[in-house]
Length: 141
Image (cartoon, rainbow, N blue to C red; front, side, top):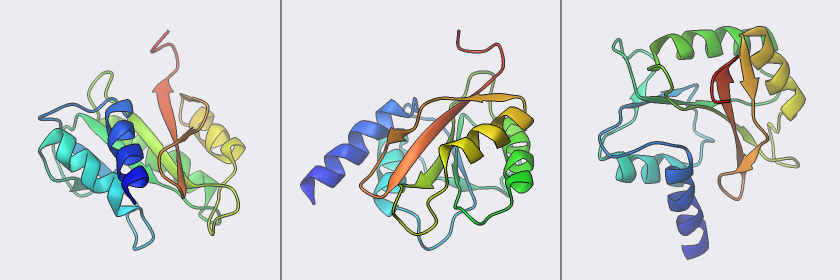
């Protein structure tokens, strides 16, 4: 269990979040990895806020599973990006291959492209979840 917590803690920083950040969480369900959520909250010192939060945020995590509508993912990415500050981190978290709900990175990349975003290579963020950072076209180069 220690290895999982160390991985999640390390990745909380790799997400690009920092102390004091308000991080918005989209599409939470009971299958999410609570260790990721806890480590982000420990790093930022703030509770995650849900998609109904009506102010600007410093970053976003979006939980996505295969079987959900790809067009809905594009729309959700657009909605999430609208509340993130200029270069705030925006991550799509998907179950890893072989896990229930595993989504292909090409599905996320296609939805991101439709939403005007570039998708990075997936990063392992926990034993069961990968994270894919999105950036607006022309950003982060």
